[in-house]
Image (cartoon, rainbow, N blue to C red; front, side, top):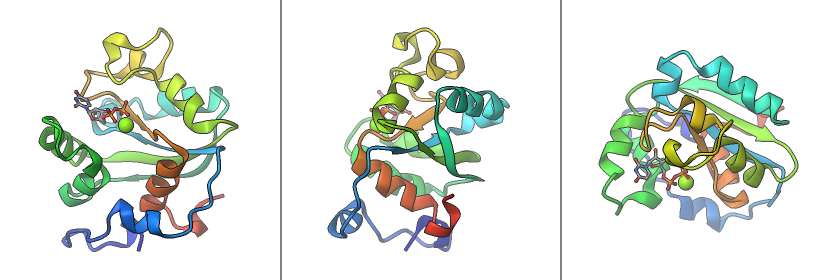
Length: 164
Ligand code: UDP
Ligand code: MG
């Protein structure tokens, strides 16, 4: 089941492990991103998408949507034991986000370079987080950290027929 098909009132019962147990086609040319709530609210969506396209990424799939608390909790469940988890879940479900699957050679690594460090005060000049992030928590964009997670995260949001 895909996240987009869930009844928003239902707590998601799936977990990353379920996706891992399926045979996942590994690819090193796609990553998954979200433009986070504070960046969307500030009207940065167009400028951030432009950075991605100018950075050589092709948009395979894209949508504007809002995560429920349960969905945000599931998406970030790898951080469940971290002290910032509760705030992260509240923040990520606080307003609409823009989700996208992006394509480029070495997509995961190159996209992490394009967005910069988690903490914008440590992010390199010219990176998306340096220029658009508010803080370490409200840091404008998400980028997958591995090919496997790119596949899992993209599948949360998009069905095969939404990818072009
Ligand atoms: N985060 C936070 N405080 C921290 C570390 C992370 O609020 O000390 C938030 C931040 O929004 C970050 C997300 O949790 O983007 C996921 O953390 P991760 O370490 O995976 O950073 P990322 O991969 O997004 O750079
Ligand atoms: Mg991460």
